[in-house]
Image (cartoon, rainbow, N blue to C red):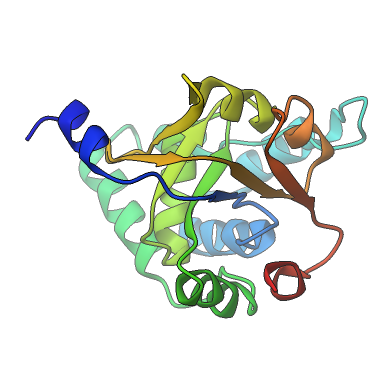
Amino acid sequence: MDQEHHETLRKPVPQFAVIDFDRTMGKTNALMSRFYALAESFGINTKTILDAQNATEAHKRPSGEHKPFDPLPLLRKALGNDQNKINEFKEHFINAADPPVMYDDVAPFLEKLRLNNIEYGVLTYGVSKEWQEWKLAASGYRGRKIITTNEDKGDVVNGWFDDGIFKIEDEEHETIRAYSVCIIDDKKKAFASLPEGSTGFGLTGLMLLNQAE
């Protein structure tokens, strides 16, 4: 069965929730702590990577937010571009137990969505698709995911709108059709171009459970 036929047969859902990852579901600081601890165990001098991170994040945007940092190019260089070592590092990074990546209220929130038959997926922005994939895998999240290089997620949602319905294709190329979309994110810019008929929840703290009720 081809993808177009699959789309036609599947009944559209009333609403699809797209949830941000960094600082909404996943602890960015925990991910970087895991990365640096592992780098040191591989004998990498992490000062160069840390200096690059600090330099990148020192250049704040007009909104006051830090620029995102991708450590993978520096990791590859430190490992001599040895793909076997890079793969080994990735495996340890993804499977490490500490520090935990997900906020404590994420699992109960996702369960609440499931119990209420609300379809959802992660919509995450990153300067590097690969680094976002590493972080998602390390968090333990195994659901639908969409990775974008567009910080205006409302604009991304606009791009899904086609002939009166939203068609959302995830990284596994499964297409979900929905009559409306809800964005949950911690950045105002994510809602800049949110289309009419859609909703959004901007997080100022970990209030996901209250918003789902």
